[in-house]
Image 1 (cartoon, rainbow, N blue to C red):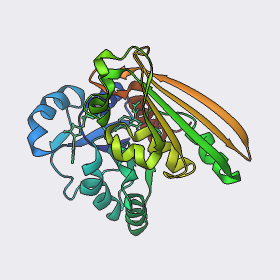
Image 2 (tube, rainbow, N blue to C red):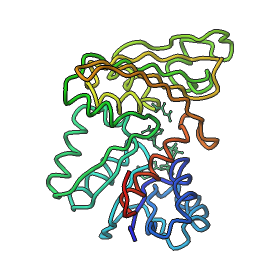
Image 3 (tube, protein in one colour):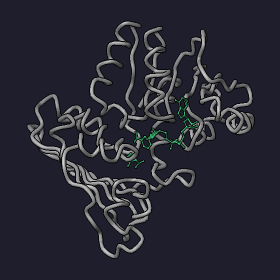
Amino acid sequence: MLHVSMIGCGAIGVGVMEILKSDPEVAFDMVVVPEAHMERARSTVSTLAPTARVVSRLGDERPDLLIECAGHQAIAEHIIPALERGIPCMVVSIGALSEPGLVDKLEAAARAGKTQVQLLSGAIGAIDALAAAKVGGLESVVYTGRKPPQAWKDTPAEAAFDLDALKEPTVIFEGSAREAARLYPKNANVAATLSLAGLGLDQTRVRLYADPGVSENVHYVEARGAFGGFELTMRGKPLAANPKTSALTVYSVVRALGNRAHALSI
Ligand SMILES: NC(=O)C1=CN([C@@H]2O[C@H](COP(=O)(O)OP(=O)(O)OC[C@H]3O[C@@H](n4cnc5c(N)ncnc54)[C@H](O)[C@@H]3O)[C@@H](O)[C@H]2O)C=CC1
Ligand SMILES: O=C([O-])CC(=O)C(=O)O
């Protein structure tokens, strides 16, 4: 039985607990959320993981695994201190890692605690192939992200374009993954994941579209290198609870937890 503590109880956290409710090999002991969100989280957790406690910090507890499904702040607040204490961690807010120095801090904390932090693939596939291709040498990685216009509300695209009136696919951003993450932090997870697995934030090229013709989060990746090349298209269905988040992200967390908890890992 794997004893897990989860940070965050939003669209991803709830989706993960719903699926794993029926897995006898995974137990959620604690769910960590900010004070202000505790009441709402308690009522959700009481049905999905009735034995779990909702807390605002981990305290002295030592779960077998701590998983972050919360956002940028949670990495400095909870993950780094847990790694330093030797608790293995998983992180889903990969976009947060485009902040200069944060990946190095995570690595240093895991080294200090003699443990490991796993960065999850979330909404994008072929991270295994890309990271393996990097060993032989990559020449180019280009990522095109395409979402319905409403998915770009509350981003710089809203000021630059009349999103509700768009009739054609419209490029709202073109540049490096570093710049994409700076301007579109809540949509930066896929670009940052591809960068970390591949050529880094400055060499990974990104193009973002607001496209009235799609209802899914479409991720297209072209990679070239000594290994040859690949093209990948993902058409991620958004979660009803958060249209910025593809459902595959939930399944990616469930897969990662299953791989730690079960006898067979794939
Ligand atoms: N790797 C990937 O491909 C993807 C990653 N994400 C990332 O996953 C994260 C969670 O996404 P959602 O569940 O959709 O968000 P959400 O907004 O639905 O839920 C966030 C949850 O985290 C909690 N939270 C916020 N700050 C916290 C803190 N400092 N400490 C503890 N808990 C905190 C909130 O109370 C809430 O329960 C976001 O950072 C998002 O960008 C989302 C989609 C894809
Ligand atoms: O598709 C998703 O779930 C998330 C996404 O585009 C991103 O954050 O890069």
